[in-house]
Length: 101
Image (cartoon, rainbow, N blue to C red):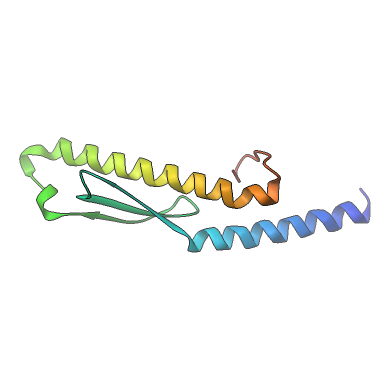
C-alpha cells in the first residue's frame, strides 16, 4: 500500500467521522394514529423520544396502542436510514457500504 492510498483512506475516515457526528445531530419524526403517537429518531437510527397523547391510552385497547407505537417507530427508523444514506451518498459515491448506508 502506498502513502497516497493511506492518505486518501485517512481523509475518507475523517470525512465519515464528521458525517456521523452531523447525523447524530439530525432528527426525523414519524407519527401514527393521526398524530396520537409521535417518535423522534436521530440520523444514526437512535430513538430519541416517544410521545403518546392521553387519548390514545385506553386499557381495553392496548394492542391498538402497541400497533401505533410499532408503526411510528418503524417509520422513524426508515426515515432515519434514508436520511443517513442520502447524507453519506456524497462520500461513498452511491456505493452501499455495510454498516454505513
